[in-house]
Amino acid sequence: MGDHITNNLAPGAPHVHASNGTLATFFDVLTLAATARARTTWELQLALWLAESDQTILGLGMVGFDVSELGWTAEAFEDQRRFLLEIIDGAMAREGWERLPFALHDATWVIALLRQVREMVERLPREALPTPHVRTWRWHDGLPEYGRCELHHVYLHAAGCILCNEAPLEVPVPHRTAPPKRAS
View 1 (cartoon, rainbow, N blue to C red):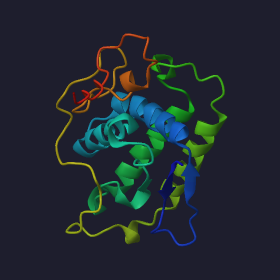
View 2 (spheres, rainbow, N blue to C red):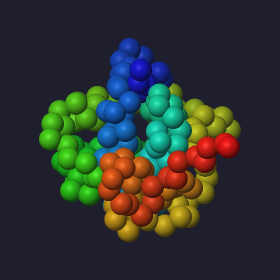
View 3 (cartoon, rainbow, N blue to C red):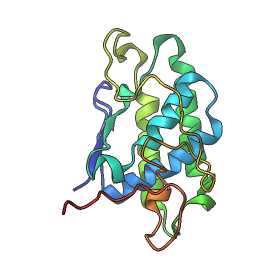
């Protein structure tokens, strides 16, 4: 199973298939880097979208995306691209990884995915961005409103914390999504 990350607007750009576990870790480490750096409205919305890309909530195989669909704006595209490249670089430098709820002894697979996505973002042509009246991204217009997880220091989403949801079940964490109640 797994999902894809694509760059459909860049002619000849490869697409990447990644396992569900690799994608979960990809979003975990990018969420750590983005939350630490986000300042502008777009950056905050990106950080929240990353935190909301929680497969515990969305389901396995439901977090793939195309890099053209990240809510880019024509007037701030270069700054937005620079921010995304900075958080990818921060994630590759293992910034904040000490707050991951699991030991990541071999990170070569997530680093490889980060490198591939970095190349996709670098190759995304500004001219190919969707026009402002065509909304192609799946994030909402609001800013983070649930605060930050006091343990992991990432933005919370409506159902909890992306990193609390990755913690082993025997580890107590403050914002784990409650399992659904069984019908009697």
